[in-house]
Image (cartoon, rainbow, N blue to C red):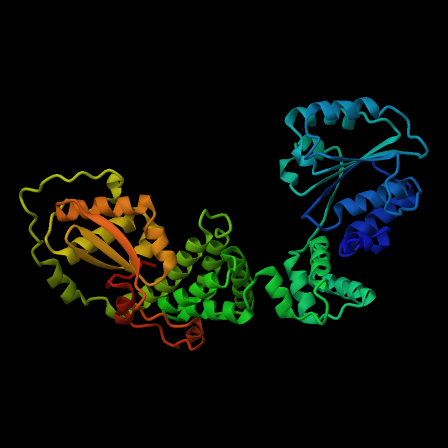
Length: 481
């Protein structure tokens, strides 16, 4: 059984550590002067070398060569598994025992933020008056969860994400030693996937090397499940300058190919950030887009969240143009304001609405005009259910007897509308509008023109006209900016 690369190439001395020069220099100077602290705190992202440096430092403090093997006087504790007060009390009782064969007994407590409040209090008592032969090295990815009383009794070192160029250089050195044939672009993708953590990047290199042969960027993309750069560019251009249908076509391809929406959002954020740094004239819109894309991974439905965000940004830009070219003149606006309001029937039979909140209910108007009823339903949904509204406005409704059938162009839209909660909301609203019980069905319109995603590559330079959007979305209303 072969040894994993991240273990095989784990640093054995401080001088071998990659990307944390500001920390290494300070620790090396302290070792030379013999100014050793009784407690250190290492904070920073995962995979940036906190535990490796802790182990190396523990050995060098004791003037021991680090071979990667454990030492009896260097005790490692995983706080995630030993977080209770009993474990820390046991540690507190044992710290008074002198080291077996070294000058210092060193305790390395990893993920220290996982300790309970009671355990922190017990640890604090030991940090306040530690035995002369004991040194603590605490490591955590979430320093904000540590009590200030703990932090104040340590020397704190903040680790930073590994610079991509340094990560690529390190990966190239490993690849050359192992005899891997891998392109520079592939290594750059691997380094980027590590998200600033060198350990994850080395682990990915180890994984992809098993396929053998020349490793190219597309091989890395396939393994990571990330979309090609061209697709991300097309999605960006469709969002900023294309038609809503272009966005939906690309997202349909994204779903069919199994790309994770969270990864798509991350790739799109990287692309958008680059555009902002390059001085894009759309910097204000792009900054807002970045703030929205951050929310995608945490969403209960990342794909729907991504879709609504991109459509919202796209239609927001369209509405700005529409407002500037089609705003009524003061004379027309005055004439419109003088039009008599449409009379409301004096008597309206009450309709039972169970699933819709009152704030989302349209005016209590019973009408035989289905188009009017549907427009009122869309308006009501928009006030209360933004995500549902984004999908609903793309459906084509038809009334047949006591059933309203919603035809969707995309299966994932049908799936969303067929959810029991959403169908009940629509049924209640339609019942209130039409004055009689109405059921809701959702189908996929297989005859719809589903243009391939590659059509998005030919983006129009001008924003789409309002009537084009109306044809796609089945209404003339445009989202407010």
